[in-house]
Length: 170
Image 1 (cartoon, rainbow, N blue to C red):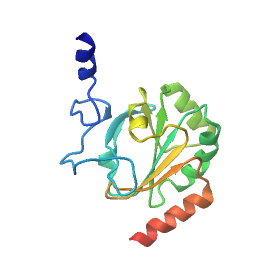
Image 2: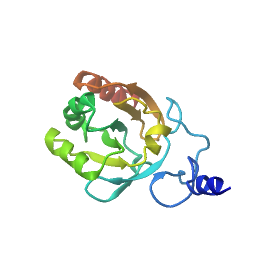
Image 3: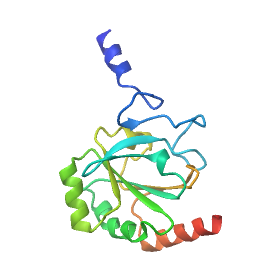
């Protein structure tokens, strides 16, 4: 019985509990998933170095949502390419898988990445997005719909193609 109480207190993908992790959209459009054509699951997470970010508040500009970890070699290698496109008609948001501020800030300093890096301390957001092997990058339209789901590293050529596709969609 105690176990059920503890699990119920944890909330879930539709949890309306304030705080960090997965949260409902304001005026939720209904069922959401991380698949192309669906609305990206909303979340609120702490940012490395302070503050917080809620995904739904960032809509209005296309987003590259990148799931990464400092121990992931491919993740480290793609940081420069992601940094190069951040702010070029797309916002890059990194979601770190279960590491602390110090590791994420050290990676940012080492790679020169200055885009927002959120801390998925318990891995709940990463699991909802099915980011089971890193890196994973999602292209999310300005309206919050997932356009593309990319498993594995991205490079400058791939990102240039993505940006060109987003520009042609307007």
